[in-house]
Every structure is written in C-alpha cells, then in structure tokens.
Amino acid sequence: MTKELAYEFRWEKGKQRIYKFSLANDYKMLKHFIGIFDEEKHYSENVQLFFQCCKKNNIGYYSFMSNPGVFLAEFGKIGAAVFNDLIEDIRSAAKSSSFKKKVSSRKHNCIRNYRSAEKYVKTLFMKYSRMLVMRIDLGFRNDHPEQKNEMSLEKAQKYFFKFLNNIRNTDIYRNQIGYIWKLESGREKGYHFHLMFFYDGSLSQKDHYIADQIGKYWISLTEGVGIFYNCNASKHKYRNCGIGMVGHSDDAMCKNLYLALKYLFKKDQFLSEKFKLRTRVYGRGELSKLRVGGAGRPRKKIDSS
Image (cartoon, rainbow, N blue to C red; front, side, top):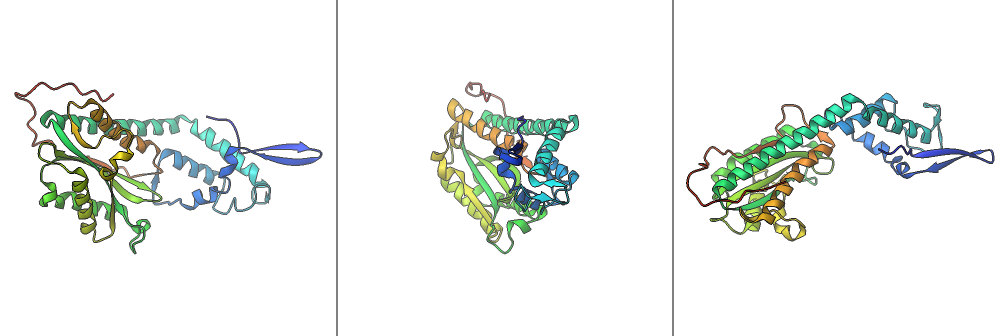
C-alpha cells in the first residue's frame, strides 16, 4: 500500500504552493462517488469503508465542489488538506483487524463458490465426454421506462427464476444437461445474471444459435425489459476461450473453461455492491439425474489448477 498523498504543501518565497500527485486526479470525482451512495444498499467492504470514513469526516456531496486550493470554512482548511486527511483515515481503517477479517471472509466465500462450480462441471464430464458450453449475460434495458435504476432486486429475481423454470418447457431446453448462474449488480448495468449452460455435445451443435435463442426467450419472457449478451457469438475475442464444444480430453479447452469459472467468481472480491445475507447470488442445476459410475472408457484426470 502506497504512503503517497494527493497533495503536498511547500513554502516557497513566502508563499504556500500545492503540488499534485496521482491521487489528486480523484479530487473532483469524489462528489460523484458520494452521490451514488444509497442507504438501502449493501456494499463491499472496501466501498463501505470509504463511505464510513467520509461520514466520520463530515464529508458530503458538496464538500469538494470548489478548487482544492480554496479554503473550506466548515473544515477550517483548504480542500486539498481535507482530501489528504480522508486518504490517511481510509488507510488507517484498512489496517484494522476487523476490516481485514471481513475482506478475508469474502475471499473465502468466493473460493468456496468456485470450488462448488468446479466440482459440478467435473461431475458432468464424468457422464458426458463432450459438452457444448454457452456463456450468456442477462440484464435489463436502461432506455426503457422501467429502467435499471428502478428495477428492484426482488423484481429482477422474479423475472430470472421464472425464466429458469419456464425454459424447461421449451424446445431450447432439449439436450441441456446443466447450468450455473450468478447474480451481480453494477452502477452501469444494474442487476444482471451471468450464466453458463451445458448441453450434451454428442447431440447438440451451433452454440451461437442456441445461445441466441436463449437470449431471445429472456427478452420475450420479460416483455421487452430484458437484454442479453451472447458470448458465444464472439468466441474469437477471447484469448483463452473455454466456451463452445469442450471435450473431456481436450486439456487446453478444459483449462480455459475452469479459468472462465474462476474469473467469474473472483470478481466477487471487487464488486461495489453486495447483497443481503439471505439473497441467492449463485446457483446451479441439479445432479440427481446423473448416474455417475459403472463401466466406461478410462478418463484422463482433469487438472484445473
């Protein structure tokens, strides 16, 4: 962790001069960060720490409207000095054992969820030698009367779970053997869901087309409020592509598939918003119908490390 502050003050020829460093670029952005805070939402430990320190130092939306060299009467010092104090307070709080414990707990949960997803995929591979893997993102339009900022978590979940339940009764579901989903929330995208669908590779092809049909079904079910992104339509953009047809013995594709899973769950460590304790943020299909074991050709061990 750097010890550098945003500003440094020096007396030169009887005048105080202010020298800027890299963190000074965030001075004018601070009011925007404070402006998005919502008491009703739950934020990640890092973001929550920032807001707590702002509150402790009585820093509000209008605190940094003026030039950093302007004297702020409510603080008794210029804006640059107030900003430096805030930075030092954040760094001090980040060193506390309670904060480190919270961050460690979140990291542990990310690893646990990834291991669960990894085990799920490995179990599918024990029955299916080839899987057609699709990655689709489902969200909500921001140019619709029911915009993302007005889309409640409860309504977003209602749409999504209806989607998971109803798609089973469509032709799109044919040959599907499993899925993994994860809920996220962001300032730009609002509530959205990342999904991986797994189809029997011996019976299914045209992953781009199937993923497109899944996305169109989402739009239909949400009555036009929903949007989707078909990752399989842009497989060429991925340096380490782990979607499309993935064979159990294709070491490179398997490794990329597990890397994609790991990245998906690792992002949880840095999300700006987190969810309430009982909110379902991750799920997968049932494995009860899979009969794993018995005679079959030898399989190579999958190493996802």
